[in-house]
Image 1 (tube, rainbow, N blue to C red):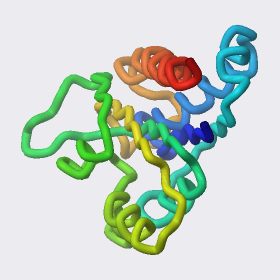
Image 2 (spheres, rainbow, N blue to C red):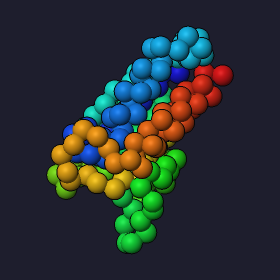
Image 3 (cartoon, rainbow, N blue to C red):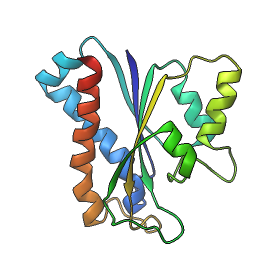
Image 4 (spheres, rainbow, N blue to C red):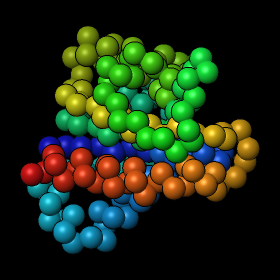
Length: 170
């Protein structure tokens, strides 16, 4: 199965870089752990980072069978969760809330709209899109260090992504 793991965000905007930091950790784990390499040796896994949404994110996804996205999230309407809370979502969940930090942009379209357009164009899209979103606290201050709660979530999300990769290769 051809799988893309993409960490979204800006690594110099405090918690906004959570997706990128998880992608780095996943990539390092895949490189360094023999047991993971053997579990995933039959799979074609690409790990990358991006600071894009909508159309550009959809373009990254073309040609893959499965995509795992890691991003920051801020829940709306006073429905704020504790920073560091991890949400595992489907593409439908994303459509229902459409509030991950980078899945939409004022200068672009939402990821779901972009994926719908690509499907109408007949592009090879992933059959499965899995999103790990981490509730963030600070995304406007320049720092390459996340807040403590988000930093504590990074190894947990990394393990969740690695577990998904193990399951898909079983």
